[in-house]
Image 1 (cartoon, helix red, strand yellow):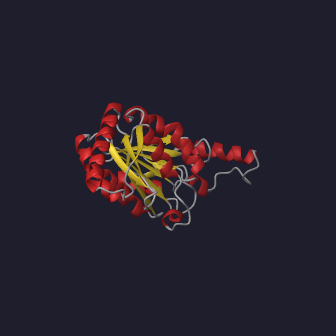
Image 2 (cartoon, rainbow, N blue to C red):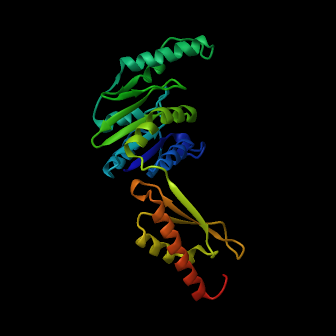
Image 3 (tube, rainbow, N blue to C red):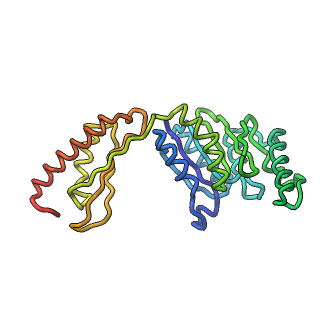
Length: 268
């Protein structure tokens, strides 16, 4: 299963705003046994967004999740880019119009907006690529969409973190985890006897050759004799969710590590 995430917004690529959506989605998917292969930040430019989406599809991504660019302002152009990639029209959708209309009526009654009428800017949020399935926004206004393009399914979610997270949790995550989840992620951590990550490179390679279903990741905390490295052994995908494989990888790592330690002859 290949999933990519695309976070859209000039505020992201300029560094003015931190991307809070991609890490949130990636971590939840990881815990379901699904590893996101690529996360891309892109500007609010139709051609740039379309290029990133085409690239993800060309790489064989079965699913692409975007966040941002669904709002009422001129720079909210994500759905135009999706329509261009899918080679379909971007048209007002009656159900989307109704969604947006109801949301603004609710906001007006609550005193949160000065009027309920659908202005052209508000109606813009109801323009969706032809053939798309609408995803209701339980927190904000702009609907999300789901659209099949070739062999890829695109999920376009809002950029406001509260809106994105709610839509992801309620709609996207259950669907993805049900279809592609590999079960609970298994992570085992040990402390290396070495304080230099470079000394573990060959050991890690040997372990992954013997246990190809286990991902081994050293995590150094710094240099020096008092600093040690934490090594993670991860089973994060369907074929990796095997506790016995992780335990075997840990034992093999420790055997090789001990051999390397004894050959080295010191405590560096």
